[in-house]
Length: 152
Image 1 (tube, helix red, strand yellow):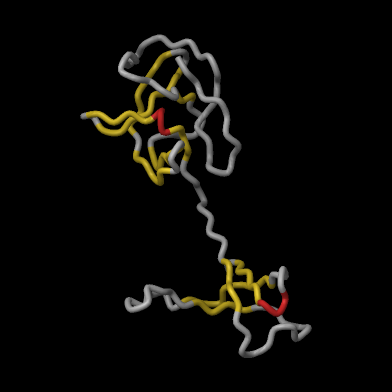
Image 2 (spheres, rainbow, N blue to C red):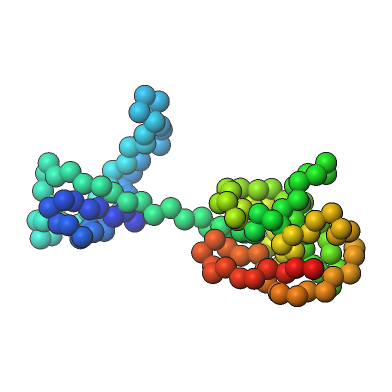
C-alpha cells in the first residue's frame, strides 16, 4: 500500500504513481537487494511490457529524531550529553546520537524536541548553574528550518 513512483525514459519528466503490492521480505545475500512487486494503473496503455524504468520509494519516519548543532554535544566519561536550559537553569541531558551531518547531528533519544539547547556549553558550564538566554531556539526536526540556538 505504500506509494511508489515510476520514471521511464520514454516519458521524460513524467512520474507514474503506483502502490507496493508485495515484497519478498528477505534480502538476496548475493545482490543485497529486496524484491518488490509494484502495481501501476495503466488505463491509457502508456506503460507496456519490456519497458525499463526507475522506481522511487519515499521513506519517512513516524517520529524523526531531533537535530542539534554538533557544537552542542559534549563527550565525557559520563557519556554523550547535550546542555539544555530549563527555567534559566543549566542541565545536562544524556542522549544517543544518530547520523552526523557535519555541522548538525541527530539526537535519536534523550530530547523531547521543545528544549532550549546550549550551542557551546564548554567546560565552564555546571549542572544547576544559572543561565541567561541570549538567543532562544529549540531542538528541531530535520524538515524544520534552522534557527538560532541558545548561548550563555
